[in-house]
Length: 259
Ligand code: BTN
Image 1 (tube, helix red, strand yellow):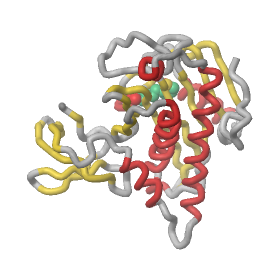
Image 2 (cartoon, rainbow, N blue to C red; image 1 turned 180 degrees about the vertical axis):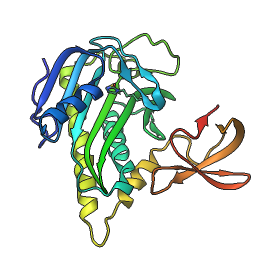
Image 3 (tube, rainbow, N blue to C red; image 1 turned 180 degrees about the horizontal axis):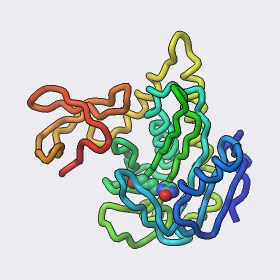
Image 4 (cartoon, helix red, strand yellow; image 1 turned 45 degrees about the horizontal axis):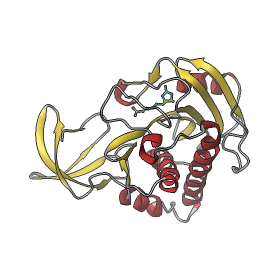
């Protein structure tokens, strides 16, 4: 049984558990639309049958082995042009949780995959609803490979495989939520800093954890292969890559990692 976390201020205080559903992101969206759900509501399932991933991909997770949930957030304080900071704080929350669990290197692969040993331990799907220049509602979906031992893809791994022990998902959820909440509160504080917010500390932490930063690798964009070196992220959350033609910025669907 999932318990209401004792270590958070608001994250997970309202917890909706369903044994099975197609997608917790879709369910969270419906819950948020039916009634004004409390900020920090967690919608969690043991068996997601049609999980949604980024770029229209699916997210597959073995039943009862992993953490598969969505957070309902109301970041009305965040300017629309800073919405990538939601991806940043969720990624950093997961990163901080993992750093507590393992001394192995953990990386954030832009835009928001979390890697250990170069393999994906967690993926995030942030869906924002905008009202004018405000973000009225955010659904932050998190798939976290906790205890799964066999994956269809060789590029996936679970935390249990990393540390060699099985984890209790009911105990791990509050720990994860605690880390996400503190990064989210950091963002709220950052927005309030005069005159127009101070986002740099969050960006610095994100860049410090960024996978393959400052390394030369092969990428593909618009059907063309090219060598490039990840430099940083622009204020819209685009990846800035140094190429032989100078710096180029790419949105989420505009570039793929090749090697
Ligand atoms: C990705 O890496 O492509 C993002 C994966 C996000 C998966 C999670 S699982 C919980 C939530 N519900 C969904 O349908 N997707 C997200």
